[in-house]
Length: 131
Image (cartoon, rainbow, N blue to C red; front, side, top):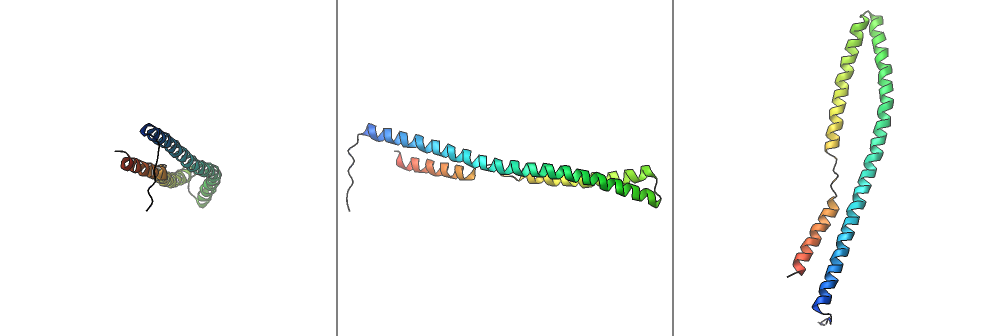
């Protein structure tokens, strides 16, 4: 087995260690920024699609509500009762959708897991190397 000899002084070694650690921290921050930017981009695209789809569905629901109200009036229900009935049904459905959407948003994970794991690994590595 060959023995490796390093002729650097303690000050030079410490300087190299400090510089390497500084570079490592910068790289970890860059990784965290990249990871968060990617996640935010995916969420913003998804949010835009939900918004546009929601606007179209809103128009369709208004048309469907008018149709159902007119159909109930045609069957013999008074207009105010038909409108009230349809409004209550749509309000319940809307409330259920809002609750489901809130639950999905609560489950969204925005924590940069990979970055945290690598920072922990780096901290463990540094603990092993430093006396």
